[in-house]
Image 1: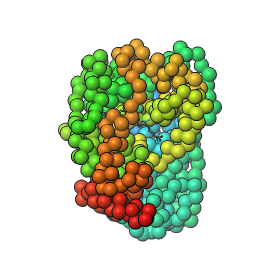
Image 2 (image 1 turned 135 degrees about the horizontal axis):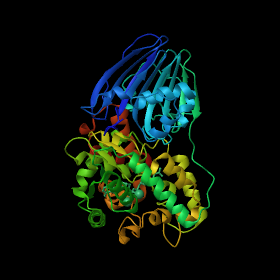
Image 3 (image 1 turned 180 degrees about the vertical axis):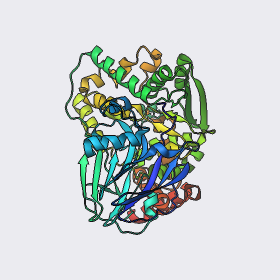
Image 4 (image 1 turned 90 degrees about the vertical axis):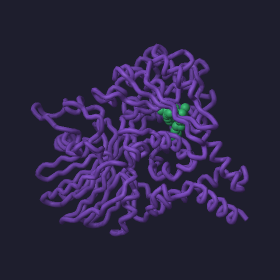
Length: 510
Ligand code: IOT
Ligand code: MG
Ligand code: MG
């Protein structure tokens, strides 16, 4: 089986009902072709729109047999292991068929076996299953009523459907401002009874709380092996991947592994007129011999794209939006056809890379906190790049890599006066010394995003101490306009929203 450069589908909007029905024509942020699916099972119908890369038939995103139908957005990374537990002779063609066969063998526990980046909807008997990967990295939203379950990888497509009014879904996160729309939790299967609209949530993954003590050489070898494998699983045969490269240890490590796995590598770095990390990325480019591009985006253009970052991520968290904006602007600036993109995103969460101090108790507190609060932030969403036709994937949040990194005792993460020590040591033979030793710089800092966003607010009369709160108001208003209100981001002006948020804050504070 050759693996395609793209998953068979990037996203979907679907509806399950006892009888037939239809799904309205939806506007996704994800760019791609739309294919309609209409599956009549004995006890329910599953109808859907699949969004997929042009030129790729989305056949492998759907599968059915007599009483079960599967829809899948995204891809699996442990296919060989998954195949190995199926009866001899079963030759599933594509990830949706593989999932269908696993469901027959394991029931909904099948989702506990999968290491992937996906969202899935399964119609079976009179039940509907909605499943996310361990990280919820492909966001999945639902609106449930007796007799109908709608689900989508983008909340905005459910906002457009005002009817039916959603049933409350205990233990799932409400989507702000969208009545009756809930986000399926990361690492879970939501099992819904189609007739009553009642649901039970089954956890399929949870971050480890135990910590492992390991000798230095064993820990570094384990990290290197896990990362190598995660990157190799994300590289398609015959395809040259693209790494978004800052020149920090996280993305440089991915670049080194990807170069080895694919035999060739393209890299791209973004900067602004106020700051960049071009020289640091260049050291890695020269060392590995990648084909490299630098893209400079003026800060004013960057901030003008805030509506796109919120529209794509469907996140209301202002800190997260500052991390995502430079990446969204970078993805939008890539011309040409869709690419398979690997990032270093997420490494700082299990390694507490954002935590700039020495004390180990506080470091592990930061890891536990971040691992308990990432769900719903949508920072790994594929829509960030899919809005310009690219598929992105994050090797540090591979389930095996993440489980390993989270579980290492804090003294392996901060050691010999270095942050992220175990990762730096694991990559010591693959990268230049200056890259291995380079202190952490966040993407929001290296691109000047945080400071130029602050400056924009201050220029609109916001006082320094209020900047954080007004940023929150700006992001929420952008969310209400582009996700809840269905406005295209090209029609939304950052400056106008900043002005209105600043005025609202001033009135409230007065
Ligand atoms: P950072 O780790 O600096 O960047 C994340 C990824 O974005 C990098 O690994 C790289 O692939 C890409 N990138 C960054 N800068 C550039 C650039 N100039 N050009 C091209 N690509 C670039 C924030 C952060 O520090 O980003 N993200 C953290 C923490 C998230 C916090 N979330 C949470 N607590 N839930 C992270 O772990 O990635
Ligand atoms: Mg990082
Ligand atoms: Mg960085």
